[in-house]
Structures are given as structure tokens and as C-alpha cells.
Image (cartoon, rainbow, N blue to C red):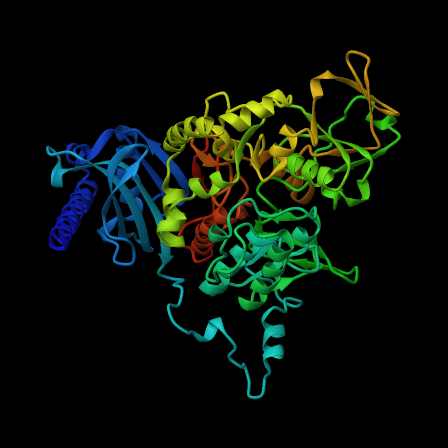
Length: 601
């Protein structure tokens, strides 16, 4: 049996290598018929910087063929071969159908790339295989390779005899009289991910953070918070999390880890440094960034590139004008000011909002003895948090690097298709829970297109709850549900309903989310830049990509990075290589036009 398995594996490797060679020949010779014979008519290709200097997707064989032919002619696409550093080809199920999964490697004009393909068996095709989807990503630039062994630039090497580590480290991160090539504004996990990439690639950078330490943003959030993604997928670049940690990391433990990570990686981090109004100088093609330091002085920096790492959702609280709320005599706060439910024990509290934060704060209040009501403004998609583990199953079977690629390789139409199938399953497995929630008065949804919580996350980062206990509290009556549409207005004593009933309250907590990141951009970079860049949050359904994240924006030398931990880990590398390519002159400064296309600036 072992020999048969080994023989089948060797045959699969031979066939997939033959398919890769045929693909390279079809592209290099621009042979349309040969290329079409290698792909299903309903096929997809997602490129991450390796062919397009952008992240983009092509849907349908004709569209992707023409795009790949054009891109490969400019950037190169050669030496396709099975990737020796990743899993061997194998047959695996995807949305209920068997496919051959293959990781491959290639070269382009400036470096090395990695690829992944799902192939379908077809006896009439070359090597008996046709592609359903292909993904390609830039892996390494020739001009900025990452050392694969101990290297002087990555650790303590005295600049002169007798220099101590403390002196060396202080000099390394001292930018008081020099400017970095790249200034990273925001020093939480996404900013640290970007900084770590530049550190390993030998690029001049500085991370600035308005708080004193990298983890302070997380320390300032509500006490009950834990990460909603499992610890197994929350590693930061190069340094995995300890394997004895709990499945879902408490926010204060995560904050401590961020502080440690910045030190372990020798990152150039400056706390208590708040970026003020930044301006781009078209003549010098550099930024002017005033930084307010801890002592109140202003240090003006002139980096070539700026990376905004202030969260993919936006950091400015959205506080709606709720009728009569200004007349309410009780305490009113946004969720960003909420710390713990303990001070509200015995008090009557209404939480406005029913996404994740609204549920978390409602549960904390209820468990701490508050009379808790959650006012639901719109329907929520609810599944148990164990579904995050199921949805991220790749991280349990392959390396983090491979799982990241499998996750990022997915074209948007396949995300939609997979999410629909998955949501049908969760509707069956959660039927009892959902019935109890509806009886308690909660409005539920799986989205207009029945794609559930995962697509709500990608599109809106709102409208869903990964249940860690609040749902059971709602079913049991510990948390009461109030349809917000029935609130006519707030009055000094509480909330007046449309039937004249008064819901007496002592406090209102607004879990109403945040403004789009464009608002942060306007405050920091000015209204012209914000208008040019446009909306930042979520996925654009026209092209299936995150708007503006880790790809060229409409503003030269301005970069944004997604706030999700797995997304930050993967996309930080792509962002760093794009910046380096522009610094090194491998590609001109690129901007995104109104039509979404990237052009030289």
C-alpha cells in the first residue's frame, strides 16, 4: 500500500510539473489556445504584487488570460516549478469537490514568487489537469533578500570597540537628527508587522505611536475583551506565539506580547509621539510630518513614504445623534470609554448596538449585576466562536505560511460560494440557539445573499457576533433585547417607546462603531487627500479586494494596512516590498486612478 501511495504521489508531482511547464510556455509564447486548454472556462486568478504591482483578481478564463499575458510581458513569469519549501501536490476537497492542490515557485524580473493552484482532473487536457483557480504572490526582492541565517544587520554588532548593547540600540532607533525612508504611524500589531518586515529587509524606518507602548491601545479597551481569532493563527512575523497560551488570548496578555515583540525584534519604535497634520511635498516627493513628543516639543520629519497603521476600520468613534439623548440625565458613553461592568452593578443600563462589542459589553454588564438591555438597531448574524476555528481549519493542517497563502489566494467569488455553503451548514447546526434568540426578541440575519458572518466581516467588519456566552444569556433572560426601532426618543428618565412605555435607565453605552478610516485620513492628511483616497473600509465587490489596503492608493507614497492580525501578517510583507521597489527605482511611484487602475505618478 505504501508503494502505491508513493507511486501515486510521484505521478501527481510529474503531472503538476508538466502542467506548470505548459503554463509557462503558453504565457511566454502568448498562445491563447494552449492557455485556454489549461483552464476551466469558469476560472480565477488572484495576483498579489508579483505580476501587477497591485493586488487584483481576474474572473473568467478570457479576462484572466488577457490580463496575465499583458502583465507577464512586463514583469516576467519564468522558471515555474513545484515549490520545494511547501507541501507536495495532493488531492483535497474544496466546497464539496475534489481538486489537486499544488504549490509552485517562479521568478519575475525583480525577484522570486510563490504560487498556488487548484486543478481539476480532465483526461482531455495537458497532463490531465485544468485550473479552477491560480494565485501568485511576490515572495522576495533580489535587492532586499531576507537573511536565512544569522546576519550582522539583524542583531547586536558594536559600531565601535566597547559600544554596549544599550548604546547600540539607542543609536539604532535615534532619528532626532535624521529622517527614515519610511514612517509608520501607529505602533500596535499592524504597525509592528510592517516594521518587522522593513527591519528584516534592511530598510530605514521608524514606528511612531501616540501611546507610550505598543500594547497600550489594547490595554485601554474593555476588561472582558479577548481576541476573537484563536491564538494558533495570531502569530506575528518571524516569532510564533507560545504554544501553551489559551485558545483565545486575553487583551492584556496580547498587549504584553506586543511590547515584548517590539523589543525581541529590535524594532525602531518611538512611543509618546503623536503625528499631527501631515503634508506631501510634490516637489521633493516627500512628506512633512510634525510629531508632538512627550515633552511637548515638535519634531518635523520628512520621510519618503508614510504607512498608516491605525486600524483597518478607523479609530474615530461613531456617535450618532439619537433623539433626546442629550436630555437623558444618566451616564452616556461610547464603547471606547467603557472599561468594566463592575461600576454598574445594580444599575439599569442600555447598550445600543448588537455587533460583537455590543454583545461583549452586554454580557460583562449582566455578569457584573447590571440590569442589562441590548437595543438592537439592525439584525445580527450569530454563530458560536468555535466556528472561527472551523473556518480557519487550514492553520491546523499546514504551516502558518502555507495557511496564510491559502487564505489570501481565495478570489472573492469563491469566498462567496464557500461562505454560502458554510452558512447553510451553520444554520442547521445553530437552529436551536437561533430559535431561542428569536423567542427572546433578537432579530437575526445571514445577509441578503446568505453568506453569513465571514462575508459580513470582510465587507463591513460589523453586523455579526461570534458567541462567547452572550447568546445563552439572552436566551435565559439575563440580557433583555429591545428593538431600537420602537424607541421614540430618549427622555431624562430613560427611553420612551412608541407605545408610551418608559424604559427607566441609569446609563447608556453606545456600541455604535467607528467612522471609516477616511475620517482619520482627513484629520491627519487633510480633506483633499481623504477625498482622493476615498472610502477605505471593507471589500469592494467590483474587484473583490480590500479597498486601499496594502496596495497603491490615490495618494503618492501613502500606504494603509489592514488591522486584522492574520491579514497584517501576510499583507505587511507585500506592502514592504512595494515600498522598497519604489525606493530602489524598480518601479515608479504608483497611484490608483478613479477607474481603479494603477498608473505611474
